[in-house]
Image: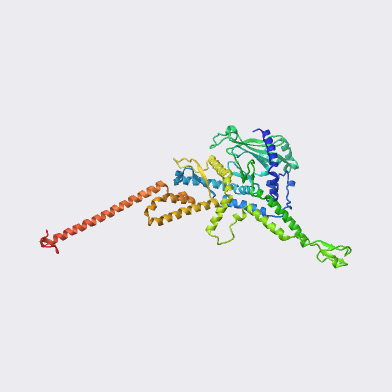
Length: 551
């Protein structure tokens, strides 16, 4: 991609964004995410960062937005537990304990790599972007040692979509000092930058730089399972100076698209997403105005203005503590009563506060403060959370979480750090299953249903024994183990189970033969004893036999 084309596309896309979503983002940044200057203010230097947010009089949206972002991280990608598992697309492979043990080790390796990176920190920023701006751009880069994530500042980014409405081109504008450019690119910097290194402005004066990620059309069929030179990889990137379009450093490459562009929800005809904050921005602005007016009126009510008749006060009115004022007529001096209806203002504030909290799902996502909350109530609350956040979670999986796990798998595969596949096995396709609070609640419900069904069958089979034939006990137990997250190395493989049962059947058959032999020996011994008894009777006949009976 030519350097000049990169700067031209940046200019066109940035102008387009300024004419559409930027005005709403300004209000969101003011009333929902104040003091986020590092991420959302395009400042050429430190003096342009606005640290004074005196125009904000209400924190309802600020708190609700952060709580929504925190709830998403805790329920979807909690850093305190493994939040995903891998399974084979082929169900027969999922019944093989050897194959499942390998895929579990692979999942553990991917999770460990994410834990060792800064994923937890940056995904928290991404969730905050989604809840407030409706968009987030997370980039995953790697070198020979580390995997590094960056939640890209939205104010600095524009992008272009492909035919599938996925981000295909990404452009980011940065302001960097001469010291920063030298640290990143060494001596491969323009002369106008290197000249600043020996001046007092080396660490303050900033240059405008464009970072671009783009697909290489002639490299889309490259084999990315092995190592490739940077220029042979399907995705290219460049750093260029916006003024003059000079290349900084060398053109690089990625094996896969490293930037994950995710939207909370989308409007037809726009590539930018919208958020809960944008949906209730009118309520947020109105509440802020009412709070400001109420505070102003409260100040007047607490310390009201004073009316006086002409000539009533000698000198100036002293309203300070212990102040002394000389008056000629006390009846000519009285305070001003504004008549402010604080009850009406408070009702409106309460209504707007509740509307904003509802827009951020705050009441629905909070568990009630009661230690007596039953398991059923917890499950109902989780189901409610799933209904509320289900569409957003589905988009997150498709646009963000699935690509993160897939690219991390590819990075570890190319490094050769994944466990070796057992001999004779083929990986095939792998599916990703998520284990956050919401997915776990669903799995627990399914596991409980299996257990309850098996208990019902056991009860019914006491009257109708044929009912047991309907249940595949092995499949039910294995599925329940998977739903409960039991490590596959705890379970025997189907071959091992078959061998164990065959050995038990053979041992049981041998035991039965021995018992039958013993029973046969006892019978022969009884017959022999009877014969000896008959010989002892003699010609006199057996006692109790009728006369004339054969001897």
